[in-house]
Image 1 (cartoon, helix red, strand yellow):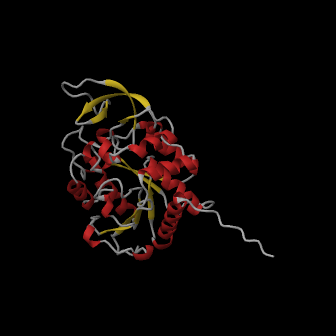
Image 2: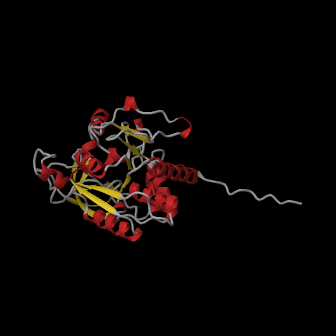
Image 3: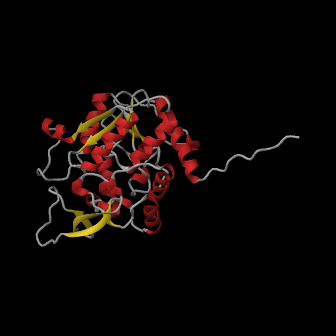
Length: 305
């Protein structure tokens, strides 16, 4: 008499993880020269975990790449370097500061946000390194322009994105073929939500920069946002700084990234807050995204992440 053993039941995180691992392996199989964009932020931390599951015990088949604005939170940069070293993976850093020195980036003022300028530095890095694929942690739930992306999102020889010229992905079949000078942006966690990311972080016990959890910080209230007080973002005329318990939902350029009020000191508490929020991650925390879908789409057409 045979005994049938029931297969373990997969939950939604298992399904998402499996899809993402398959996408990473597809990049390794189909692309000649790829890089995984790693900033030290939570989404890229999840990507690293997925890459570990896809390729370990071998080394990753691509280097890590960070486009550094020079205006990042020091805690995040320290975490980025420590995590890359812990994994023993090659980390390449290309700097907006170098693009400014070359004259390819010209800012309206020295204190202006460098967030959008990352597009130029990224395209320069893609040309320098001869990349035909960049793996990023963008998710479709972040905002409306990102929701128009494919998993394998085609960029032309000028690094530009045209939402009307994207390739079909029927039955999860991906087209990675490009001509010389073209490339694809690949988003393995495109189908994940912010809640999925935090649930995965909790399940896998992933370390994050401390800014993602509640801490007391000096902020000012500006246009409905809490702006951190830093040398790059001092209080404006008539603004009064106050100390609040806050956490960051995303950690980008200091000049445009804001925290939210929170007492969530661990991943489980963040999950509880995320379950009840009705404001998107970027809508609640990014000063440069307080514009329009059309503005974000224009930046993406020019090569933005």
